[in-house]
Image 1 (cartoon, rainbow, N blue to C red):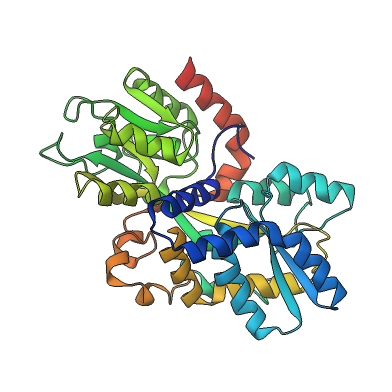
Image 2: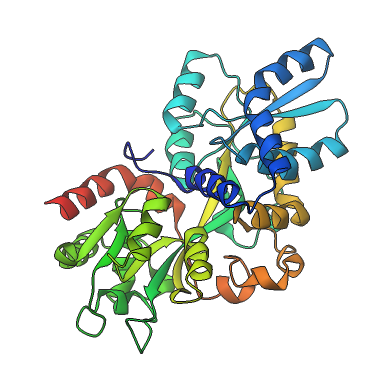
Length: 373
């Protein structure tokens, strides 16, 4: 449930992985496996039915996410459940498509890479199955934000503050510094979407991060308006990188996966901080009336319960693990870039997906009016 043309984190993971392929950071073999997976799902489904194999269909946003989710979510589940197949469907599980499928009574999807906002909105419209927490274990995640009534998160991501260290002898420490154009002059960068942007604006006003929600929307919008003449806005992850890479913006809020690219590419000139970053859940939802039935709950439980595959997904796509046992398995070189590493998670703010699910549509419309007015 988001404005048309605005790229989601999940879609940007796919785009970022494709860029890694182009730079030679992912092997040709991995690329070929991903391309095979892109076209294989319908054929695999037919083959599965012909052989009497029972199938679960996991829906993602395409590209090499097929390989990442297939290898690290599907394969461990299959090893424990012979006779089942997990197929990857890359057609994009938007909230609108989930709604249409359920309302038509022709549900072919079992588990969808979605969002906290969609889990709230679709769940309240009785379009999703509730997560069965007698099967899915709540203690398999590091914080309550990763388990919702109608969805659960086997991965995480963060919106972080990035800055050009060559411009600022004293680095910014928080969102109050981001808004301080006198001490830290230069153009700012925000997403063309209210999610995370308004949370940061609220923190810049000094509200305690332990009591951040509900957001004071009016005050936060006024705060956003203060930057309007000194701010540019991004709609996709690649664009967010480019604004900072070219110097069009000297400080910005972007996803941690893109911040990692910039920090490494610039040899540390473009840095990012975890302090007051918005830690967000990668929520999977189950469409109501899905063909896999109760078995889907076991697949979701497997995804949350196995730390090793989550760490591999961090290495492959940059998605943060959510299992509390995963942090100890993350290679030392990756800890700096892991949003759920204990040292990083401790200083972040878990985004309140329930509040955003209840308020996103009206609040985002007001945000767009504010930055374009």
